[in-house]
Length: 166
Image 1 (cartoon, rainbow, N blue to C red):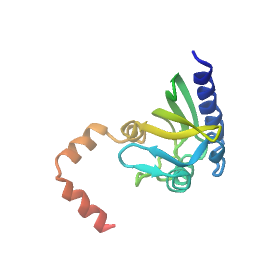
Image 2: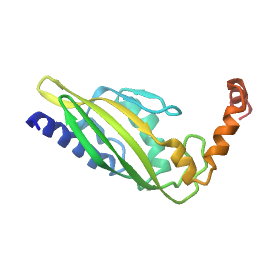
Image 3: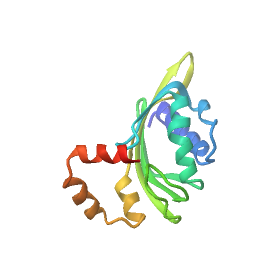
């Protein structure tokens, strides 16, 4: 493996150490300000470090205050690093409109990070993220098969109406 690939993997490892502290304000040393975090359906895409921290991370840390992420596989090639693993956490507060069960869960994820060099500084510029939200629902006690059958039995407009009732 090239020295650059090893450095890129180390950057991701260092960033994880910061993420696992579960506090805001540490990511600027790893990410460019204009970074893009492209998350799964239900969460969406965050444009810029401020949006990533305040729109995504702040509610995530509130819901999962003791979260600890650990890759079980991490590979690097060129300017890309990919990893998959689990976040082990207590689901303490509501998240994405889902009630918190107050118990420990394991959240599967997969990430693809793109690293750039600008003015001699190498940082993360982009993150493509998959989170197993259905697995999270299942661990909270939902029968995911029933959830999917219910959703599949309704037209999209049905769910728009639910938003108006809140």
